[in-house]
Length: 385
Image (tube, rainbow, N blue to C red; front, side, top):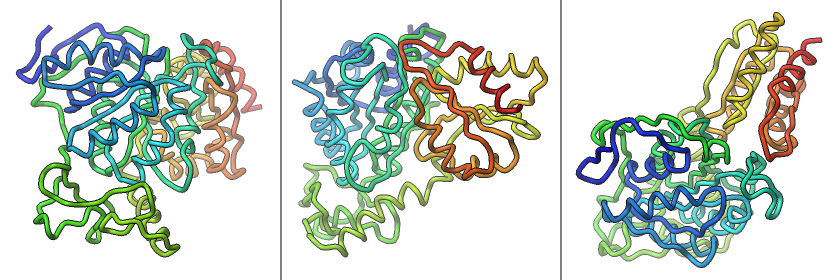
């Protein structure tokens, strides 16, 4: 095990997804974490709590998930890269303050290692039923970014990407891992720190008297000023003007919320990310994410052995959804088959984008385990009849 001067590990390691996620956060420059223990995510912060002393980071175990998310928002406004880690019930508790982070344009990362639900559900067993909650869980109109890794290596790599996206767009980024990936142990290669692309906080160059925290200057993303650097400003979860002061008007609400949404929607082509394979001339495309994308491979191979041309779309960035590509594919295939460890969530987005031009086939699984690949094969075969 080697570490660079900042304490970031390098080289090849045998890590589970939770540990790899923690290493990715530290490599991305995260130096503040607040959280509350909850299965199956606790190992992420266990790793961080041991390693942070080597690099000057701070981990605080809070009294609950509401406080954890609030602490992350506050820490981020000091200019410190910050994140929190949770699962099902804790994710629900964080939603109000995730909305606050959206409104205050606070860059941060929230890791949800998904398990079976609702309520306490299956704490030690896998699920993927929080995907729509990630998009719609807080109230009001807003856009954010969510990602889904399929391996411990991606748990490391994509956590870094999540922090970079949070900085680029001043938005919370949700990291939607699942228990299988979180507890799966595989080889993870960590490059030297100087080979990892890191996006720093974009700090204002304006003089303190000229700075307004939400003045975008024709851009979608305002510059940032750290609390404590001599800039006097106000920030709030209320509808606010460019100075950050509350303004209770329909006009201000429209201007502000449209910009909050446009900075994501207007950059969707840059943010959207997926893996595509063998879609040209395909009869059916299988769209999946997380651990299900790996399980689906065997079902796809079984269908190919029976002569079906099957393409693959694996979501890496889940929100924003790759609407444009799904609309294109819908006009060329008989069906898009969507296996997921829930009773039908992302398949609804596929159905919306397909708009009746092809079938949208859900392959549900209630959680607690992964699909039998033969069920995915059967769905593919049924879609081509």
